[in-house]
Length: 175
Image (cartoon, rainbow, N blue to C red):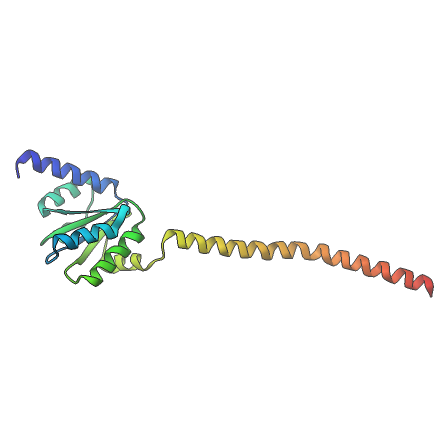
């Protein structure tokens, strides 16, 4: 690789680091090109998966201000740059790694700090943002219905009391 090509590759990887909401570093030793294509399809639009030389990735990470990942850059390294929802990408990678033992998750980076393999798996076990928002909306709707019932209860009790008093008054007058 010529020096200009290396500089361009470092700049491109550094830009991906800067744009990504999270990254997942993997080792792909033993995976075929077809397997990697399948993983890229599984990631969909939420992430891009890039195989790169360790020295170039280290330089790009330094250039992007990413610290704490140097020990992950050994052996054949590929990085998933997550631009969408980190949970969706982590789920896709975890599922693919479960089905293809050759893919090894080494670690990652999110919110300005390195992530361990266990933390990435915890992120993968979370429910997606849409599901959590739907659950929150359902809980809020249920609580609002309860509140409306509580606010209506005193008014309906007053109405029943007034009706009872009206019925009682003619009965007293007749007696």
